Length: 345
Image (cartoon, rainbow, N blue to C red; front, side, top):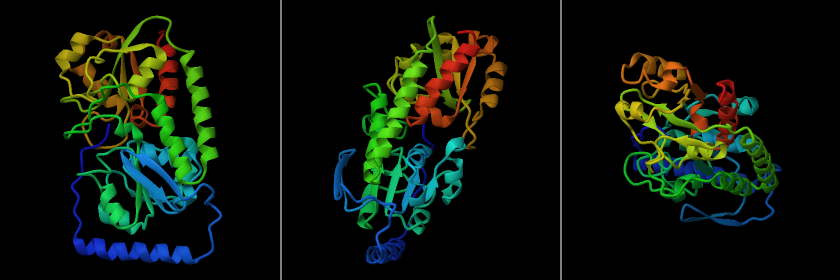
């Protein structure tokens, strides 16, 4: 799930000034010695991303990643030295990536302004959500293209209906292969295809191992991302759908194709899942962000206090990043499997 859309404000004069700066930066780089970090074999590279054709003459050297999922893929591919900034975080970065992440400027915890992104002088911008890299977001691929800056949007966003102001609708279940596609395509874009193959191979093996820990009995669950007044709960077919299919868990709201529908608590109590999967977020955007706040709310609300999962403390906690489609989806399958075992399921 993404955050509410920001308001974009930028003047034409700012675009012209920053565009000139970027052009000058590119010219300086092109006249210098080639950088060893970029493998130019296989370039120029052309691929299709969300219906747009992208052509790169060489791998990016100053990327800005918007959204944590996109950032963690680039860091996992060993590309910290080619990242000029990150933004839009829900949780701390993976421990294994923390040292590299410290070297990269954080443009904002939530949405940076368009000006702030351009001040980083990027030659490429990546994002996980169309609400970030799209109309009404931080910027659009079209605006960046006018300045000679390439961009890439997670293909997980491109296989759902993003009409309206919510999180979109999926008519077809998201598959783990789409997440792997994002990894391999970004690896190709940055000239490190072998690293992408290695990362996908590692994640695939881990997912297969986690699937073998699936509960022996039938288990139903709901996935609560945030908001106590009108909770955002997972529909059938996003990241939590991958978790459920991997472990044979029934989502009690698998009858909705909305990515994160807002559902009233009376309906939640009627569905009465065996387990409640809670997003344990560290951001401060909505109510009931942390798992502790969610549990406190469920126990204090008379509508939910009598649910089986609440009375028996059958809670599973995941980071917000693990509930969004990303490399964290594999971590989520592992964590859910282990926590269900701890609950005796």
